[in-house]
Length: 199
Image 1 (cartoon, rainbow, N blue to C red):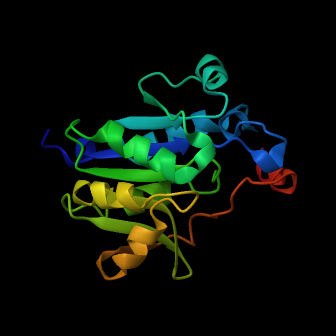
Image 2 (cartoon, one colour):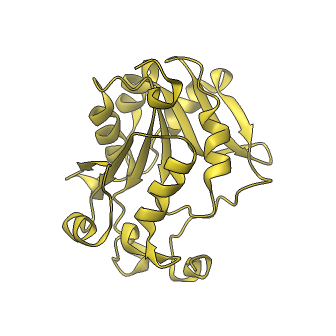
């Protein structure tokens, strides 16, 4: 594949169990009449990711039944309860050998981050050594673009709920920060109070 669009795969982490939401899988929370996971996939596609891998965990069978994820590669993370790090590892592993040269990593519980912010970060792709991250008033957040040259290092340090945080801290100087505060709101849907953000 020579086209840049195909070289940047979308990687959606959608395995969370919503412990503080009474154990409801976050992927199936309703947003604009559809499961949150469908919305998140649509955002990645609108941002230019033609290939999308979705990591499932909590309620994976229900998510497969109730959400339209056609055209996506579905990745089961049996260790999802160990935190986001395990999902990130599973997702990056699923992309290895596919021809993807970078992963645009997004989280299913951040519906305030739309296609414009995703596309800005995706545009940070240069080659497989690229590292780019959305920033909100200068503070690093999601989504994050991880060039394939970094996947092994990220996987080696992704533990608990920290995801790529430790690796990115070590490589701070290499990260292209992409300001997105003008087009996105990076809240998480973690608690019952956060459900106010869903429409």
